[in-house]
Length: 255
Image (tube, rainbow, N blue to C red):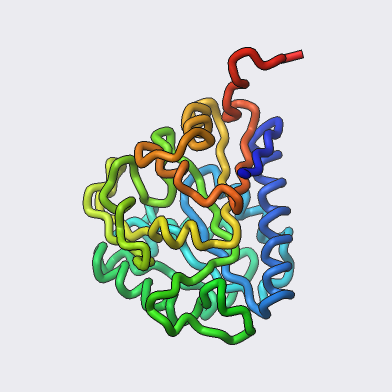
């Protein structure tokens, strides 16, 4: 079952998310010797990253990945990597060798293929528990420990958009090239739905009334029209502010 937490405002959402992410990463590092965190772009996660930089004071053996990236260079103002660097990576002094940037400037297909190889080389699938295990079997989907996600008003997560063919990709696909994003820029690289579902935890953040309908749809029946509804619900935590909270069911008591 999806865990839904509703808080007063966006700042409270960011604080709760930073605390939960830090705890999950520390637990993963204790258990497996290394923790793998994937970040998303967007204004909602940005404040969480700022708080996470101080909430988790020791970044040793925490490897940072990305849920998606625009096909731009790392200095471009639209780059998710640039956002992460400015809000988290530089402040927390995360070593460069632990940060795995999606090379969006290579283009959708080459960027996705390179990232898939990197994931297979460094992130073990869930079945492989021992420290130092590697996902050498190309049929095994690597299991990231925590993926931070936002949600669009249309219900998209990462760069998986409603009705897109990427939602029907092979279950062994790790990364996908996107050529026709409905939001500019059109070309992107994204983790696949299989990668999102394989993660040990997804933390999805939503603030403002513009996200309320999307959150409600996400919590409804799974549908390709709402990609967020396809996430693995038993491993999904949704943290929203009052404005983004779904309306109560018809007939529910408000007293």
